[in-house]
Length: 291
Length: 245
Ligand SMILES: Nc1ncnc2c1ncn2[C@@H]1O[C@H](COP(=O)(O)OP(=O)(O)OP(=O)(O)O)[C@@H](O)[C@H]1O
Ligand SMILES: [Mg+2]
Image (cartoon, rainbow over all chains, first blue to last red; front, side, top):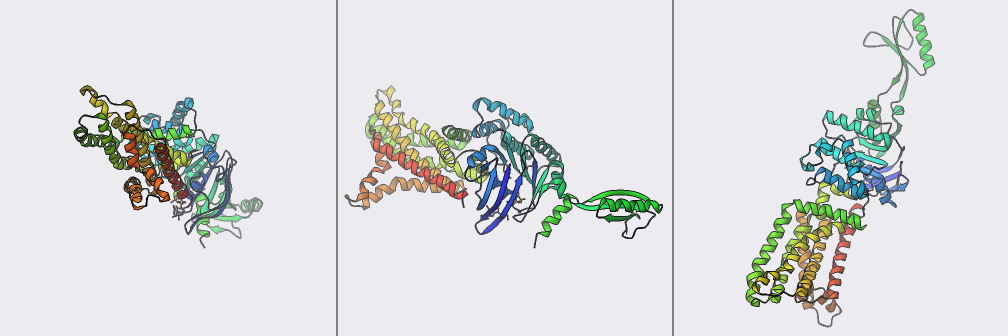
């Protein structure tokens, strides 16, 4: 649904994106993960046709972001990082304006607005001026704006930033729900959020893509581990809790070792694949590429 | 195209409507114009409503020099400062639609004031005056025409910076140049110079005098339209170039 190929973006002399390439599958919720200053917002601004690429190509829903920018903009709903809204307008007024601007037919505007508002749980403030809203409400008005014209692709730049934990959970659930019937590409640097909501991830570090693929493949396999007691194996280590553990490259090796433990009269506590958590994978990816 | 321009203009009008600045500025401009024009015009023209129109149009031209910058300075600069510009232009709209929509909103607000000035002579009716409808119409056309040039200049100024203060000062400078430069340049040139005719045509002061006297001059209208279009084109180009940096 989104294809980025060799995208370079320079700001004057500073290169923010060094020829990045990745793809986002249609119908997926894909996280765009990176530290502060990695280039997430820059990438999303190119995807949303706010900034032109210095070079490289960006295709969204089959349209080229440079040559067919208006077609791309019709297909996307975009929540900018700063969630810009007009403070003097009322929520309902603003959403109606945005719906009409994005080409929703005049007869369908009311329905589209009330649907987006109830989906984002801002239907209780439609008559309130935007300037009087709390940050969490403002964020949700921004998301309602992004979905009001029922776009195929949603591009959200840190939708949970600056929210309290309860609001964060709500927005996270909303993003997940929105992903059920469209493609969502959402930037963040909060890892538990990714694990809770996303199918795929793309990791960017200092303007380069350092990993991308399904979430499951990212927390990469580290072999199979057994934990046991009252037995000895040649490659076992003693753990803090007094038990021993050994890691094997394959399940076969691990299960024959487990059989040996049982044969020695030992107790087998665990036989399970070792997973490197996403957190660990992320910190490995974003420090390893420093050099 | 037209509909999206109008959607943008309508939202802008809403902002104008809720902001006190618009009303205060407009009321102040009208009051000031009435205060200056009224007694002076009546004294000078001895109750002659035609002379009154000429006087009040001249004074309104002066009012436009500060009304147009106030109405137009925030059009684009404020969206850029607050970041709403990013939301605006990532919607399926073109830069031309954005610029024209914004311009149009400020133009409509200004036209309310200009229209009041154009029909001012009606005040003389209870006192036995008989205003000339043709003259009122041509005065109105002249006022909204020069107003559109100044507001387009302000829109251009607003595209140049994200500070509305700076945009306001720039707009005022542009308006002063537009008003006085053609006449000053004309004075410096010989009468046969190739530019003389063009400069004489571009003199907004002369145009408003024509209009106030009841003259509907197609060339004046076309000149104002061309100047407006050129300034709006500059504004569009500025928006484009800022994104393509
Ligand atoms: N308009 C700009 N002009 C110059 N440099 C810029 C501009 N915008 C961003 N940068 C630089 O480009 C780099 C990437 O910025 P970007 O905003 O894309 O990062 P990010 O991943 O979104 O970070 P964050 O998590 O803090 O939002 C940063 O080093 C930033 O300083
Ligand atoms: Mg960012």
